[in-house]
Length: 380
Ligand SMILES: *Cc1c(COP(=O)(O)O)cnc(C)c1O
Image 1 (cartoon, rainbow, N blue to C red):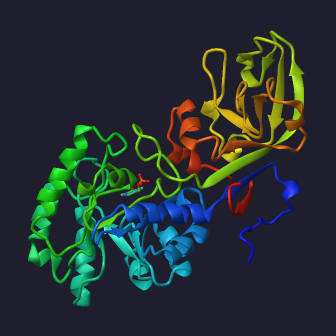
Image 2 (image 1 turned 120 degrees about the vertical axis):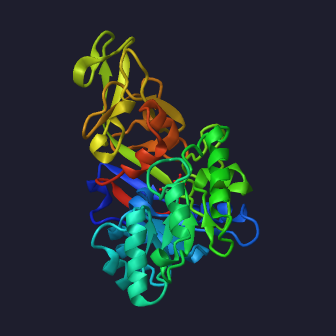
Image 3 (image 1 turned 90 degrees about the vertical axis):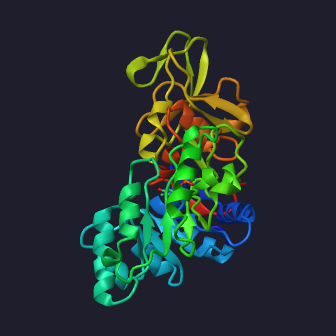
């Protein structure tokens, strides 16, 4: 089979193209895996359709690379993944939503039990079954999202009557501030996690997301759960990104036009041409996941695209279906009608565009591409 996998329609019918490099995702997984010492297992967070990259393609490619444990967010994602990967270990981070236990058992999917109620329900099922059924227990070490409180965790893990035959397949917690390694909360959560889990030497433990892996081996424990780093994103804000880019968005030029000095561009007339400008209108907008907050105005700069090594700043507001770019300084021959402009990729980091929109690359990546042609293959 060709490494290129095209979407439903002929390429010319799309306004833009999203290319995803599965080999780069696999290489990022191997890179992270190689940073682990001893028996530590490298799993993969594959929630939100593999951060927008497509779980149906990413799952099998990571399995082929050696990944055996996957974390989805909601049960529907896990059920879909089970159909593709019959042998993988699959966890659901959101845990045991009401009425889902049968589905978990029937599909051999493991909930991450995130509250005392969920633990009680699962332990009850184990007592009825007369055996332990695999599930993780999430203990909150400070993020105050999911997880049993430290007190609940300690009390219930000593309560033989409550647990019955249930033994967690994994004890996990989640870092709140991994993207800022110097943040004191990282160390606090690490210490708390160590303390809380010290009495369970035979149960595997997991604390690290991507940032935790990159921070230090102290955070690795028995299993790590990288997400964003697999998809080329920026796990740590204060250091250069060591991962390979895995996605590229290109949009087609529809028209190139002149804007006289003093005129304005786009909705709201918030961006004035401060000199005579040449403006390219491309076929991608916020309905394609382009972040509207990365628009420009006279008060603040916006994001940019790249055309043949030339930067093309966003001019004015990003609309639903199109973006206007300043191509005044881009050579004429690159500005053909139908030519592609890179809006994300090796030359336009998702994190950089996300920063203009005051958000993070996680949000940019997971909002991408419902309307783009989707191609699986190399980025260049
Ligand atoms: C999303 C998530 C991860 C992966 O986080 P990244 O920052 O993308 O590496 C790991 N653990 C939990 C609990 C998560 O929710």
